[in-house]
Length: 57
Image 1 (tube, rainbow, N blue to C red):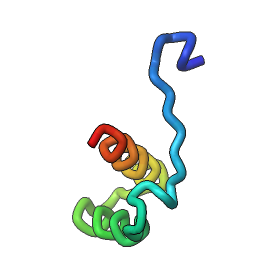
Image 2 (cartoon, rainbow, N blue to C red):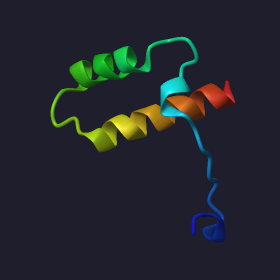
Image 3 (cartoon, rainbow, N blue to C red):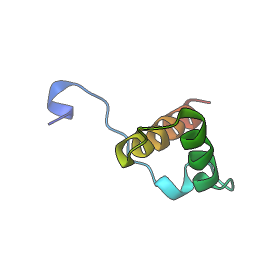
């Protein structure tokens, strides 16, 4: 459906977003600094944003 609308679709492996860095530690740090309400959907969006940023670098 996204491709039919002309949107880019990119797949990523959440556990390999940061290469050798610990994604859980990065997300935990983000969760602490942002604070509530931090939900699973926010974590997913953060991991996707990190994957996209890394791909563009």
